[in-house]
Image 1 (tube, helix red, strand yellow):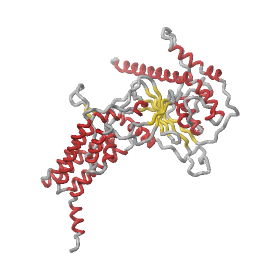
Image 2 (tube, helix red, strand yellow):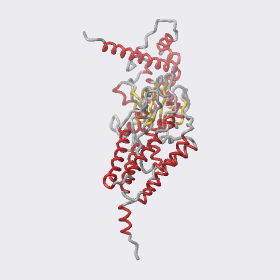
Image 3 (cartoon, helix red, strand yellow):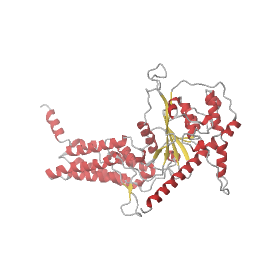
Image 4 (spheres, helix red, strand yellow):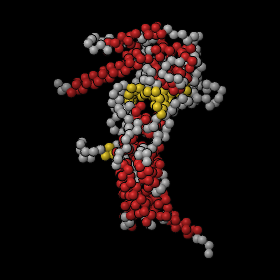
Length: 485
Protein backbone atom coordinates (compact mmCIF):
# COMPACT_ATOMS: atom_id res chain seq x y z
CA UNK A 1 0.00 0.00 0.00
CA UNK A 2 1.62 3.34 -1.03
CA UNK A 3 2.43 5.97 1.57
CA UNK A 4 -0.11 8.73 1.95
CA UNK A 5 2.36 11.60 1.31
CA UNK A 6 -0.33 14.15 0.59
CA UNK A 7 -2.20 13.25 3.74
CA UNK A 8 0.96 13.46 5.86
CA UNK A 9 1.84 16.86 4.46
CA UNK A 10 -1.72 18.09 4.92
CA UNK A 11 -1.70 16.92 8.54
CA UNK A 12 1.70 18.48 9.25
CA UNK A 13 0.87 21.85 7.72
CA UNK A 14 -2.54 21.82 9.33
CA UNK A 15 -1.12 21.44 12.85
CA UNK A 16 2.74 21.36 12.99
CA UNK A 17 2.99 20.43 16.66
CA UNK A 18 5.79 17.90 16.10
CA UNK A 19 8.36 20.54 15.14
CA UNK A 20 7.66 23.07 17.90
CA UNK A 21 10.10 21.47 20.33
CA UNK A 22 12.82 21.59 17.65
CA UNK A 23 12.13 25.24 16.82
CA UNK A 24 12.63 26.19 20.46
CA UNK A 25 16.24 24.95 20.20
CA UNK A 26 17.23 27.24 17.28
CA UNK A 27 18.96 30.62 17.58
CA UNK A 28 20.40 30.83 21.09
CA UNK A 29 23.26 33.10 19.97
CA UNK A 30 20.78 35.61 18.55
CA UNK A 31 18.99 35.76 21.89
CA UNK A 32 22.25 36.49 23.71
CA UNK A 33 23.10 39.35 21.35
CA UNK A 34 19.59 40.78 21.63
CA UNK A 35 19.91 40.85 25.43
CA UNK A 36 23.36 42.44 25.19
CA UNK A 37 21.93 45.18 22.98
CA UNK A 38 18.88 46.04 25.13
CA UNK A 39 19.99 45.33 28.69
CA UNK A 40 20.78 48.23 30.99
CA UNK A 41 17.63 50.20 31.78
CA UNK A 42 16.61 49.91 35.45
CA UNK A 43 13.81 51.08 37.73
CA UNK A 44 13.32 51.31 41.50
CA UNK A 45 9.74 50.07 41.95
CA UNK A 46 9.64 50.49 45.72
CA UNK A 47 11.21 53.93 46.20
CA UNK A 48 14.66 55.50 46.06
CA UNK A 49 16.18 53.11 48.59
CA UNK A 50 14.91 49.94 46.94
CA UNK A 51 17.23 47.83 44.75
CA UNK A 52 17.40 48.47 41.02
CA UNK A 53 15.55 46.02 38.80
CA UNK A 54 16.55 45.64 35.18
CA UNK A 55 13.79 45.92 32.57
CA UNK A 56 14.80 44.41 29.23
CA UNK A 57 12.14 43.70 26.56
CA UNK A 58 13.58 40.70 24.70
CA UNK A 59 10.53 38.74 23.56
CA UNK A 60 10.01 35.00 23.99
CA UNK A 61 11.15 33.22 20.82
CA UNK A 62 12.36 29.91 19.44
CA UNK A 63 15.92 30.40 20.67
CA UNK A 64 15.31 30.88 24.38
CA UNK A 65 15.51 27.22 25.46
CA UNK A 66 18.83 26.78 23.63
CA UNK A 67 20.15 29.99 25.16
CA UNK A 68 19.15 28.86 28.68
CA UNK A 69 21.74 26.05 28.52
CA UNK A 70 24.35 28.26 26.84
CA UNK A 71 23.82 30.73 29.66
CA UNK A 72 24.20 27.97 32.25
CA UNK A 73 27.46 26.85 30.62
CA UNK A 74 28.84 30.41 30.64
CA UNK A 75 27.72 31.09 34.21
CA UNK A 76 29.49 27.98 35.51
CA UNK A 77 32.46 28.08 33.08
CA UNK A 78 34.02 31.45 32.26
CA UNK A 79 31.32 33.07 34.46
CA UNK A 80 30.40 35.68 31.85
CA UNK A 81 27.00 36.52 30.39
CA UNK A 82 27.85 39.17 27.78
CA UNK A 83 28.99 37.94 24.35
CA UNK A 84 32.44 38.74 23.01
CA UNK A 85 32.76 41.90 20.96
CA UNK A 86 31.78 41.23 17.34
CA UNK A 87 33.53 44.33 16.00
CA UNK A 88 37.37 44.22 16.09
CA UNK A 89 38.69 47.51 17.49
CA UNK A 90 41.54 49.07 19.41
CA UNK A 91 41.32 51.81 22.02
CA UNK A 92 44.26 54.22 22.21
CA UNK A 93 45.14 56.45 25.16
CA UNK A 94 46.24 59.68 23.48
CA UNK A 95 48.31 60.78 26.48
CA UNK A 96 50.92 58.09 25.87
CA UNK A 97 49.90 56.36 22.63
CA UNK A 98 49.23 53.06 24.42
CA UNK A 99 46.80 50.84 22.45
CA UNK A 100 44.51 48.19 23.90
CA UNK A 101 42.62 45.50 22.02
CA UNK A 102 38.96 46.06 22.77
CA UNK A 103 37.11 43.28 24.59
CA UNK A 104 33.97 45.28 25.37
CA UNK A 105 30.77 44.43 23.52
CA UNK A 106 29.36 47.92 24.00
CA UNK A 107 32.47 49.71 22.68
CA UNK A 108 32.64 47.39 19.67
CA UNK A 109 29.01 48.14 18.84
CA UNK A 110 29.63 51.86 19.40
CA UNK A 111 32.30 51.81 16.67
CA UNK A 112 30.28 49.54 14.36
CA UNK A 113 27.18 51.73 14.57
CA UNK A 114 29.25 54.88 14.10
CA UNK A 115 30.75 53.44 10.92
CA UNK A 116 27.27 52.47 9.74
CA UNK A 117 25.93 55.99 10.23
CA UNK A 118 29.03 57.71 8.73
CA UNK A 119 30.00 55.91 5.58
CA UNK A 120 33.16 57.00 3.81
CA UNK A 121 32.57 58.54 0.39
CA UNK A 122 34.15 56.32 -2.23
CA UNK A 123 33.37 58.29 -5.37
CA UNK A 124 33.19 62.06 -5.00
CA UNK A 125 36.38 64.10 -5.34
CA UNK A 126 36.77 67.89 -5.42
CA UNK A 127 37.71 67.77 -9.12
CA UNK A 128 35.23 65.02 -9.96
CA UNK A 129 37.93 62.48 -10.90
CA UNK A 130 39.37 59.45 -9.20
CA UNK A 131 42.89 59.82 -7.79
CA UNK A 132 44.26 57.03 -9.97
CA UNK A 133 43.47 55.14 -13.12
CA UNK A 134 41.74 52.43 -11.09
CA UNK A 135 37.94 52.90 -11.12
CA UNK A 136 37.79 51.41 -7.61
CA UNK A 137 40.12 53.98 -6.02
CA UNK A 138 38.68 55.67 -2.94
CA UNK A 139 38.14 59.40 -2.87
CA UNK A 140 38.65 59.55 0.91
CA UNK A 141 41.59 58.15 2.83
CA UNK A 142 40.17 58.50 6.33
CA UNK A 143 37.33 60.07 8.30
CA UNK A 144 37.93 61.38 11.83
CA UNK A 145 35.01 62.44 14.03
CA UNK A 146 35.66 64.23 17.33
CA UNK A 147 33.22 63.92 20.22
CA UNK A 148 32.93 65.16 23.79
CA UNK A 149 31.71 62.45 26.17
CA UNK A 150 29.17 63.41 28.82
CA UNK A 151 28.46 61.90 32.22
CA UNK A 152 26.50 58.60 32.02
CA UNK A 153 23.04 58.37 33.54
CA UNK A 154 20.64 55.85 31.99
CA UNK A 155 20.42 54.39 28.50
CA UNK A 156 17.95 56.32 26.37
CA UNK A 157 14.85 54.42 25.26
CA UNK A 158 14.78 54.19 21.48
CA UNK A 159 12.58 52.51 18.89
CA UNK A 160 14.39 49.17 19.26
CA UNK A 161 13.66 49.10 23.00
CA UNK A 162 9.99 49.99 22.65
CA UNK A 163 9.53 47.53 19.79
CA UNK A 164 10.37 44.77 22.27
CA UNK A 165 7.37 45.67 24.40
CA UNK A 166 5.13 45.97 21.34
CA UNK A 167 6.20 42.46 20.30
CA UNK A 168 5.46 41.02 23.75
CA UNK A 169 1.99 42.62 23.75
CA UNK A 170 1.35 41.31 20.22
CA UNK A 171 2.33 37.80 21.36
CA UNK A 172 -0.10 37.99 24.26
CA UNK A 173 -2.84 39.20 21.92
CA UNK A 174 -2.26 36.28 19.53
CA UNK A 175 -2.28 33.81 22.42
CA UNK A 176 -5.74 35.02 23.51
CA UNK A 177 -7.35 33.99 20.20
CA UNK A 178 -7.49 30.22 20.94
CA UNK A 179 -8.48 31.00 24.53
CA UNK A 180 -11.47 33.05 23.38
CA UNK A 181 -12.51 30.91 20.43
CA UNK A 182 -11.78 27.39 21.70
CA UNK A 183 -11.27 27.80 25.46
CA UNK A 184 -7.68 26.55 24.96
CA UNK A 185 -5.51 28.22 27.60
CA UNK A 186 -2.35 26.25 26.77
CA UNK A 187 -0.97 28.77 24.27
CA UNK A 188 -1.59 31.67 26.64
CA UNK A 189 0.19 29.79 29.43
CA UNK A 190 3.25 29.18 27.23
CA UNK A 191 3.48 32.85 26.20
CA UNK A 192 3.07 34.14 29.75
CA UNK A 193 5.62 31.70 31.17
CA UNK A 194 8.08 32.22 28.30
CA UNK A 195 8.07 36.01 28.53
CA UNK A 196 8.25 35.89 32.33
CA UNK A 197 11.31 33.64 32.23
CA UNK A 198 12.87 35.90 29.57
CA UNK A 199 12.36 39.01 31.72
CA UNK A 200 13.84 37.26 34.76
CA UNK A 201 16.88 36.13 32.77
CA UNK A 202 17.50 39.66 31.50
CA UNK A 203 17.10 41.13 35.00
CA UNK A 204 20.24 39.45 36.36
CA UNK A 205 22.45 42.30 37.69
CA UNK A 206 25.58 40.71 36.23
CA UNK A 207 24.44 41.73 32.73
CA UNK A 208 24.73 45.43 33.57
CA UNK A 209 27.98 44.99 35.51
CA UNK A 210 29.61 43.29 32.53
CA UNK A 211 28.22 45.68 29.94
CA UNK A 212 29.68 48.74 31.69
CA UNK A 213 32.58 47.24 33.62
CA UNK A 214 34.90 50.23 33.45
CA UNK A 215 35.47 53.15 35.77
CA UNK A 216 34.63 56.82 35.38
CA UNK A 217 37.25 59.51 34.88
CA UNK A 218 38.64 61.72 37.63
CA UNK A 219 40.47 63.97 35.15
CA UNK A 220 40.37 65.01 31.51
CA UNK A 221 41.30 62.26 29.09
CA UNK A 222 41.34 61.77 25.31
CA UNK A 223 41.00 58.34 23.72
CA UNK A 224 40.55 57.12 20.16
CA UNK A 225 38.60 54.10 18.93
CA UNK A 226 39.44 52.63 15.52
CA UNK A 227 39.81 49.31 13.76
CA UNK A 228 43.43 50.20 13.09
CA UNK A 229 45.84 50.66 10.22
CA UNK A 230 44.19 50.18 6.84
CA UNK A 231 40.70 51.13 8.03
CA UNK A 232 38.86 54.35 7.32
CA UNK A 233 37.34 55.61 10.59
CA UNK A 234 38.58 57.10 13.85
CA UNK A 235 36.41 58.15 16.77
CA UNK A 236 38.16 60.70 19.00
CA UNK A 237 36.48 60.87 22.41
CA UNK A 238 37.27 63.74 24.76
CA UNK A 239 36.33 62.58 28.25
CA UNK A 240 35.61 64.83 31.20
CA UNK A 241 35.46 64.25 34.95
CA UNK A 242 32.65 61.76 35.66
CA UNK A 243 32.38 60.36 32.12
CA UNK A 244 33.28 56.80 31.19
CA UNK A 245 36.94 55.86 31.20
CA UNK A 246 36.88 54.32 27.73
CA UNK A 247 40.30 52.74 28.18
CA UNK A 248 39.17 50.71 31.22
CA UNK A 249 35.91 49.74 29.50
CA UNK A 250 37.93 48.14 26.71
CA UNK A 251 39.66 45.56 28.91
CA UNK A 252 37.71 45.46 32.17
CA UNK A 253 37.10 42.05 33.72
CA UNK A 254 34.38 42.38 36.38
CA UNK A 255 34.02 39.92 39.23
CA UNK A 256 31.13 37.48 38.62
CA UNK A 257 28.21 37.49 41.05
CA UNK A 258 27.95 34.31 43.17
CA UNK A 259 24.18 33.96 42.71
CA UNK A 260 24.30 33.95 38.90
CA UNK A 261 25.13 30.19 38.43
CA UNK A 262 22.38 29.16 40.86
CA UNK A 263 19.75 31.34 39.19
CA UNK A 264 20.92 30.17 35.76
CA UNK A 265 20.50 26.52 36.80
CA UNK A 266 16.97 27.16 38.07
CA UNK A 267 16.09 29.02 34.86
CA UNK A 268 17.47 26.16 32.71
CA UNK A 269 15.24 23.69 34.58
CA UNK A 270 12.20 25.93 34.11
CA UNK A 271 12.93 26.40 30.39
CA UNK A 272 13.19 22.61 30.05
CA UNK A 273 9.83 22.23 31.76
CA UNK A 274 8.36 24.75 29.32
CA UNK A 275 9.86 22.81 26.38
CA UNK A 276 8.21 19.61 27.63
CA UNK A 277 4.90 21.44 28.03
CA UNK A 278 5.08 22.81 24.49
CA UNK A 279 5.75 19.29 23.17
CA UNK A 280 2.52 18.15 24.79
CA UNK A 281 0.34 20.76 23.07
CA UNK A 282 -1.24 19.00 20.09
CA UNK A 283 -3.81 21.58 19.06
CA UNK A 284 -3.54 25.12 17.67
CA UNK A 285 0.21 24.77 17.07
CA UNK A 286 0.18 27.47 14.38
CA UNK A 287 -0.49 30.09 17.05
CA UNK A 288 2.71 29.09 18.84
CA UNK A 289 4.64 29.06 15.56
CA UNK A 290 3.40 32.58 14.83
CA UNK A 291 4.25 33.75 18.35
CA UNK A 292 7.73 32.20 18.28
CA UNK A 293 8.42 33.54 14.81
CA UNK A 294 7.35 37.05 15.84
CA UNK A 295 9.66 36.88 18.83
CA UNK A 296 12.53 35.62 16.65
CA UNK A 297 12.10 38.54 14.25
CA UNK A 298 12.25 40.96 17.19
CA UNK A 299 15.36 39.23 18.56
CA UNK A 300 17.11 39.40 15.18
CA UNK A 301 16.20 43.06 14.73
CA UNK A 302 17.37 43.98 18.24
CA UNK A 303 20.61 41.98 17.90
CA UNK A 304 21.66 43.59 14.62
CA UNK A 305 20.14 47.07 14.50
CA UNK A 306 22.53 50.04 14.56
CA UNK A 307 21.57 52.36 17.44
CA UNK A 308 22.45 55.81 18.69
CA UNK A 309 25.26 55.99 21.33
CA UNK A 310 22.84 57.27 23.99
CA UNK A 311 20.97 53.95 23.82
CA UNK A 312 24.15 52.39 25.26
CA UNK A 313 24.61 55.14 27.86
CA UNK A 314 27.24 57.04 25.84
CA UNK A 315 26.17 60.67 25.64
CA UNK A 316 28.31 62.08 22.84
CA UNK A 317 28.20 65.63 21.51
CA UNK A 318 30.06 66.90 18.50
CA UNK A 319 33.27 68.82 19.20
CA UNK A 320 32.05 72.26 18.08
CA UNK A 321 35.44 73.62 17.01
CA UNK A 322 36.13 70.90 14.44
CA UNK A 323 33.61 68.01 14.50
CA UNK A 324 34.83 66.12 11.43
CA UNK A 325 38.12 65.82 9.56
CA UNK A 326 38.23 63.98 6.23
CA UNK A 327 41.49 63.23 4.44
CA UNK A 328 41.19 62.91 0.66
CA UNK A 329 43.56 61.20 -1.73
CA UNK A 330 45.55 63.96 -3.38
CA UNK A 331 49.00 64.62 -4.75
CA UNK A 332 51.38 65.89 -2.08
CA UNK A 333 53.40 69.11 -2.34
CA UNK A 334 56.63 68.60 -0.42
CA UNK A 335 59.20 70.99 1.10
CA UNK A 336 62.81 70.97 -0.02
CA UNK A 337 64.18 70.11 3.46
CA UNK A 338 62.95 68.98 6.90
CA UNK A 339 65.05 71.04 9.34
CA UNK A 340 63.14 72.60 12.24
CA UNK A 341 64.52 74.98 14.86
CA UNK A 342 63.07 73.57 18.10
CA UNK A 343 64.01 76.65 20.14
CA UNK A 344 62.16 78.84 17.67
CA UNK A 345 59.15 76.50 17.83
CA UNK A 346 59.12 76.69 21.63
CA UNK A 347 59.23 80.49 21.39
CA UNK A 348 56.23 80.42 19.04
CA UNK A 349 54.07 78.86 21.76
CA UNK A 350 55.53 80.88 24.64
CA UNK A 351 52.07 82.40 25.22
CA UNK A 352 50.82 78.95 26.20
CA UNK A 353 53.62 78.48 28.71
CA UNK A 354 52.98 81.87 30.33
CA UNK A 355 49.24 81.26 30.54
CA UNK A 356 49.70 77.83 32.11
CA UNK A 357 52.27 79.19 34.55
CA UNK A 358 49.69 81.63 35.91
CA UNK A 359 47.49 78.67 36.88
CA UNK A 360 50.35 76.93 38.64
CA UNK A 361 50.82 79.82 41.07
CA UNK A 362 47.94 79.53 43.55
CA UNK A 363 49.03 82.56 45.59
CA UNK A 364 48.78 84.84 42.61
CA UNK A 365 45.37 86.33 41.87
CA UNK A 366 46.49 87.72 38.56
CA UNK A 367 45.78 85.43 35.66
CA UNK A 368 47.39 85.82 32.28
CA UNK A 369 44.77 85.98 29.54
CA UNK A 370 44.30 82.89 27.42
CA UNK A 371 46.15 83.27 24.10
CA UNK A 372 43.72 84.68 21.60
CA UNK A 373 44.41 82.03 19.00
CA UNK A 374 43.66 79.28 21.51
CA UNK A 375 40.44 80.96 22.66
CA UNK A 376 39.24 81.55 19.10
CA UNK A 377 36.92 79.04 17.45
CA UNK A 378 39.04 78.99 14.30
CA UNK A 379 42.49 79.38 15.97
CA UNK A 380 44.01 81.61 13.31
CA UNK A 381 44.51 84.95 15.00
CA UNK A 382 48.12 84.84 16.23
CA UNK A 383 48.63 81.08 16.05
CA UNK A 384 51.97 79.74 14.83
CA UNK A 385 51.81 79.12 11.11
CA UNK A 386 52.30 75.38 11.43
CA UNK A 387 49.37 75.15 13.88
CA UNK A 388 46.93 77.19 11.79
CA UNK A 389 43.96 74.97 10.83
CA UNK A 390 42.57 75.04 7.33
CA UNK A 391 39.68 77.36 6.60
CA UNK A 392 36.23 75.89 6.01
CA UNK A 393 36.48 76.39 2.25
CA UNK A 394 39.85 74.59 2.19
CA UNK A 395 38.84 71.41 4.03
CA UNK A 396 38.78 69.49 0.74
CA UNK A 397 42.51 70.12 0.59
CA UNK A 398 43.32 67.86 3.56
CA UNK A 399 45.66 65.45 1.82
CA UNK A 400 45.53 61.75 2.65
CA UNK A 401 45.76 60.14 6.08
CA UNK A 402 48.82 62.15 7.10
CA UNK A 403 47.08 65.45 6.40
CA UNK A 404 44.01 64.40 8.39
CA UNK A 405 46.15 63.40 11.37
CA UNK A 406 48.01 66.71 11.22
CA UNK A 407 44.71 68.58 11.27
CA UNK A 408 43.57 66.44 14.22
CA UNK A 409 46.77 67.30 16.14
CA UNK A 410 46.04 71.01 15.73
CA UNK A 411 42.64 70.68 17.42
CA UNK A 412 43.23 67.85 19.92
CA UNK A 413 46.89 67.84 21.01
CA UNK A 414 48.55 64.37 21.14
CA UNK A 415 45.55 62.71 19.41
CA UNK A 416 47.25 63.06 16.03
CA UNK A 417 50.59 61.88 17.43
CA UNK A 418 48.92 58.85 19.01
CA UNK A 419 47.13 57.93 15.79
CA UNK A 420 50.39 58.30 13.87
CA UNK A 421 51.67 55.32 15.85
CA UNK A 422 48.65 53.25 14.80
CA UNK A 423 48.53 54.15 11.12
CA UNK A 424 52.30 54.68 10.76
CA UNK A 425 53.59 52.52 13.64
CA UNK A 426 56.48 53.56 15.89
CA UNK A 427 55.64 55.07 19.32
CA UNK A 428 54.55 58.40 20.82
CA UNK A 429 57.73 60.10 19.71
CA UNK A 430 59.11 61.75 16.61
CA UNK A 431 60.72 59.19 14.32
CA UNK A 432 62.06 60.91 11.21
CA UNK A 433 62.71 57.66 9.36
CA UNK A 434 59.01 56.75 9.52
CA UNK A 435 57.89 59.88 7.66
CA UNK A 436 58.36 60.31 3.95
CA UNK A 437 57.87 63.98 3.12
CA UNK A 438 59.83 66.89 4.57
CA UNK A 439 56.75 69.04 5.05
CA UNK A 440 55.32 66.31 7.28
CA UNK A 441 58.63 65.87 9.11
CA UNK A 442 58.59 69.55 10.02
CA UNK A 443 55.05 69.38 11.39
CA UNK A 444 55.50 66.23 13.48
CA UNK A 445 58.86 67.35 14.86
CA UNK A 446 57.26 70.59 16.08
CA UNK A 447 54.20 68.72 17.34
CA UNK A 448 56.30 66.29 19.34
CA UNK A 449 58.50 68.89 21.06
CA UNK A 450 55.53 71.09 22.00
CA UNK A 451 53.01 68.36 22.83
CA UNK A 452 53.07 68.78 26.63
CA UNK A 453 52.34 72.51 26.63
CA UNK A 454 49.70 72.22 23.93
CA UNK A 455 47.92 69.31 25.58
CA UNK A 456 47.87 70.99 28.98
CA UNK A 457 46.70 74.25 27.41
CA UNK A 458 43.87 72.48 25.57
CA UNK A 459 42.77 70.75 28.79
CA UNK A 460 42.77 74.08 30.58
CA UNK A 461 40.93 75.77 27.70
CA UNK A 462 38.11 73.22 27.92
CA UNK A 463 37.95 73.76 31.68
CA UNK A 464 37.69 77.53 31.24
CA UNK A 465 35.08 77.11 28.47
CA UNK A 466 32.89 74.90 30.65
CA UNK A 467 33.22 77.37 33.52
CA UNK A 468 32.07 80.14 31.19
CA UNK A 469 29.11 78.10 29.98
CA UNK A 470 28.16 77.22 33.54
CA UNK A 471 28.35 80.88 34.52
CA UNK A 472 26.15 81.86 31.57
CA UNK A 473 23.59 79.21 32.49
CA UNK A 474 23.51 80.35 36.12
CA UNK A 475 23.12 83.97 35.05
CA UNK A 476 20.28 83.19 32.63
CA UNK A 477 18.43 81.12 35.24
CA UNK A 478 18.80 83.96 37.73
CA UNK A 479 17.27 86.41 35.28
CA UNK A 480 14.42 84.03 34.44
CA UNK A 481 13.59 83.54 38.11
CA UNK A 482 13.15 87.28 38.77
CA UNK A 483 9.47 88.30 39.15
CA UNK A 484 7.93 90.45 36.47
CA UNK A 485 7.45 94.10 37.40
